[in-house]
Length: 501
Image 1 (tube, rainbow, N blue to C red):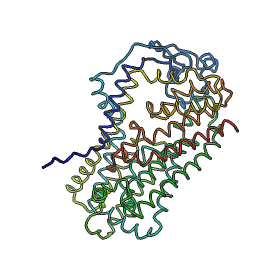
Image 2: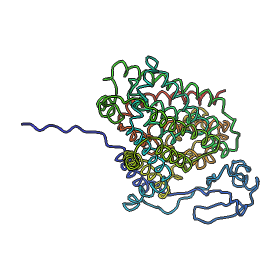
Image 3: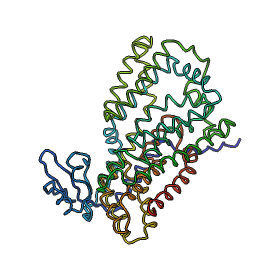
Image 4: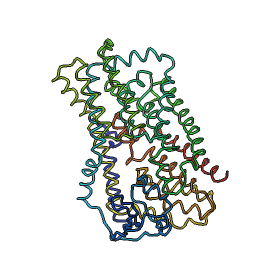
């Protein structure tokens, strides 16, 4: 009897991240360590502080003359009011420093420190998972989705259009990204009930967010920070980015709708068809749909109202994960009284629901570990210096396309939008002057490049998203790579237009 060949499967999200973590450690042995001098404003002493690569700190008066002397283009008022709070790289100050290779001990510590660094997000995920567990135990989602399916019968595509546009609007205005993790447990069952697969749901939410943040208009965390660092107004280049936002969202929407129709017409065309039964079982598609009781309606209403408060808090109050977690904890406490579940059962189901999202929490922590390795290995500045040298005097179109590629690469190593802006823009923005371009084109190249790599970078949000819905990374790559190619070409065209007009 011949032995059956084992079918190779793509590694899980955490395994992929550990592979990337090893790669980052190897880079710290190969890439020379180096640092730029960094400029910060100390509000307590009312002084600029320049931290040199050697660690020496020099104080300077917080004046425009000091900025001019350092060739830092950021607006003085933005330093003084705290808009530019992260250390800003000073052009022309790069120095090689002693190598800081990250070995086996640092490799092991990185993921642990990553969990420490992202505990705010992780706790939010656990509280959310607990609430989802309780609502699933009640049967509220199954009953509610059945009712919603009847209302949208024959017009399910409206759901895709609505979700994509709403989330893109959040992305372009206030950087809606990590917060969307809360939506998947709610929306995946709705999309499955509508006859689509989980990739359609991921695409509508994740790509809505990615396109919105990629073509940011007033997002303070990306174009706001970058414009401040470049010494230009937030309004500079906004018209081009707004046009790119509209067209980019439409391109993405057409791509998603075409795939969604194909899956709806023939479920076997789904890239996740081999997981169909598992996913339907996981998201509540088994047995008879329970009656949609008053308690279920009230519980879902409270859960939905929590999201409305969340949006208000994010937009009006500038909430971060501490406030968001407190809000969902309040939701969980209220549900304990209105759900009709016994106290002991409620706690059990809450803990089971939180445990279901353990993999998501670990993915978030390990992803941060890669950034820690690169920061501690002192190679991020070296990578920036390598890409920024030798491009002055280029043809403007060649220059800006090269800038797009550079920001795609830098975005892989530095996935934080504000972090990449404060490190790279003070170095890159003056290069535009050398080739006769306005600095707003550099800002566009920065957000486009960072947005493009966010479609697939393991150190970003995508692996946490896939872990949330049990989809492997290779299936996402098969789905997204054609769209990524289209959006890359589109972004290049928009940059060339911004250069020429």
